Amino acid sequence: MNMATRWGICSAGKISHDFTVALKTLSLEEHQVVAVAARDIKSAQKFAEQHRILKAYGSYEELARDPDIDAVYVGNIHPHHLRVGQLFMNSGKSVLIEKPLAMNAGEVKKLVASANKNNVFLMEALWTRFFPVSMEIRKLLAQGEVGEVKMVRADLGAPLTNIPRLIEKDLGGGALLDIGVYCLQFVLMVYNGERPESIQATGYTLDTGVDGHMIIVLKFSQNRMAVCTCSISMNLTNDAVIIGTNGMMKVPDHMWCPTNLEVNGKVSQHPLPEPSIPLNFTNSTGLCYEAQEVRRCLLNGLKESAVMSLADSILLAEIMDEARRQVGVTYSQDEKH
Image 1 (cartoon, helix red, strand yellow):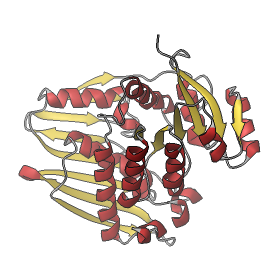
Image 2 (cartoon, one colour):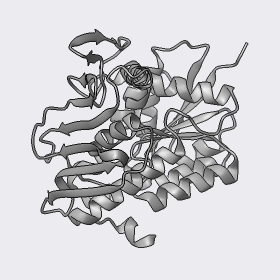
Image 3 (cartoon, rainbow, N blue to C red):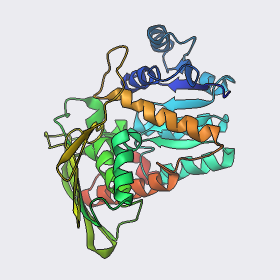
Image 4 (cartoon, rainbow, N blue to C red):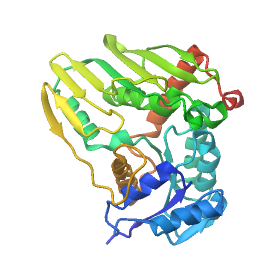
């Protein structure tokens, strides 16, 4: 019998809470949270008490040194992903890092290099990829359910400019990095990780210098197109559509955490596990699917996932870099590469 995957949680924030609640929907024989670390010991202790975790650390270094951990979930803000991810990988830990994997493609490549150097597993926690709806989309596309795909559209937006983390440059704010990443990853999933032939982006920046709204048009080989719209300034439709030569597929609502799929007018439902305690974000028990993928990869001796490969993460970051360049959004991390 295989031992449970022993998780360490890095950061005691909202998404870490939801990830831990999601893990509780899975078998204790397969997933156990054994430690949590925050920069403030009191935050870690409070989190540990709420989730009944035995060990709480007041530094990430202590978590990295813990020999009883197989995988670390990194749930802190984007600008810390590179340093913290490298810390854990240098300690021989497998790492699941919340999206976006890092601030730009240069940082993503450094994380990949660290994973290779330390011979450990690394994956970007783009949870959408692992949802049953996403798996169903991939299967149906492979079967030619809508013929040859010609066009993909994905929109995601909500008025979020009241949240400092989303508008401050030094906190990695901006529509693209925080939510536009979901739209782009959806397009790349549909087009099997193919590199677009052209990228055209337009949008506007907020007073803080981050993007408040962005529209990205991608052209792939054989005149296949995609349009992504993301916004932290206004509500958008928050859906996604795949148009093929023989029909249409639609994720009708919350495309970043989908539970419904419409194929040529017929809707199928893919409900998520019920949470044991309240969540911070919509459908967060769906975080369990990425955790299951980490365990599957570890049990099979894999260093990356075929569902969200490291090549996928690099391409995603490169597209976002180019879109930001065209709209005029730069971060201090861009100067280092």
